[in-house]
Amino acid sequence: MATDAPVIAKRNDMVPALALLAAIAAWAVPGLGHLLLRRWGRALFLFLAVGGLALAGYGMRGEIFGTHSSDPFGALGFVADACSGAFYFLPRLLEASGPDVSRAAGDYGTRFLAAAGVVNLLGVLDAYRIACGRKS
Amino acid sequence: MFGTGIQLSHFAAMTLFALCVSVAFACLGRLTIAGRIKYALWSLALFLVIGVGIAWLMYPFSR
Image (cartoon, rainbow over all chains, first blue to last red):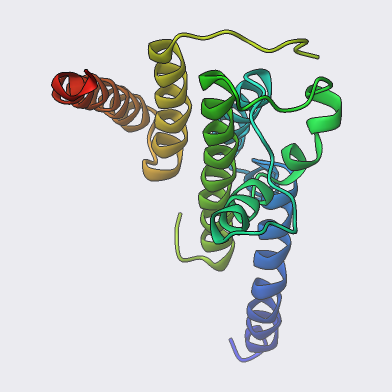
């Protein structure tokens, strides 16, 4: 039993690194953190939910907030949008015509994009907690 | 990819939003498949009922 102690200590040292890796992967691609942790169902449905919100947001020509906003709401919008990981970097591909918030649909699209980021942030926290062993 | 943009009605946009968020909440909040389906359906129904209810409450103030 005494020989198991170094192995357990080494495993405990690796937990923060694994949790950080899972969190970064979960941010970069929605569901990837859960995929690394072998939570297949969560990975798939999280990807579909975040992807659905982001694609609908881009489809409705919602606005993605940039890094240098002049007001606090713009800064909050940037934080929410940036949490969607890879989907934050897709507007040039998916929104060739650019955002159009002069119509109601464009305004809804902006909310969809922010919601995609917030939902992905929940996924990041969930992956981190699973990797830490605080959640099954 | 989407050209001039997707045209969705207010209700369709709300339903799509509610569906995506309900699925995410269910898969993060419940462990079993049955629990997830039940949670997602309840959440979706509550999103829609409360959304339409708030719309009706605001209706007298729209004119």
